[in-house]
Length: 245
Image 1 (cartoon, rainbow, N blue to C red):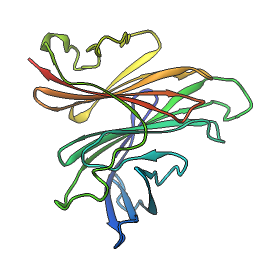
Image 2 (tube, rainbow, N blue to C red):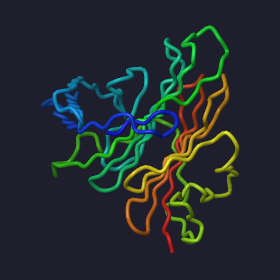
Image 3 (tube, rainbow, N blue to C red):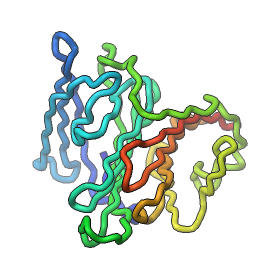
């Protein structure tokens, strides 16, 4: 996992191991996560949760009021708006084979006050790049998360001339109007062909798009668009795959 501040500067790199151990009746899973700081291996963080099945999704281990799918087959989105400490965040997942990437996008009110109507500012991005080591099927992997999931046609052919400055978030999505470069948005190009397009700030009550793209091979791109606001926990996920010609 790599952590960045709101300006895209890297602040921390953590090597991590995630393990899932299902109960014998597969009614719950033990979720173990260990982080080791790359620059100081003495800094180790271990976390462990018991995740209960919540048909057809599972309870997210960090935010028990949200649901997300740790799946080998489906992308997902989790959001936690209006936290008590004035922090709003969402996490978007993309999967391909035995690889998964996800980003946690965090917005915070500068004064951390729930009573004020001040806007939230992009404060941190956490980027996960994971590889599944075991070949055994993942429990519940055939279950779809219970969120609105609008999938566009699975493949869209695009011209490589549309990709400039190393970013591929300028590609239009279906017929819906999305202004990828509108004022007030930021595009981050991360390692391994991962790109993030998000607003700099989140106004109270405003709805916005959080866009995660992943060029997982030379000529293919996956993208997920999570619609997010600071007053709803019903994210809407759009997924799309593109072939570069």
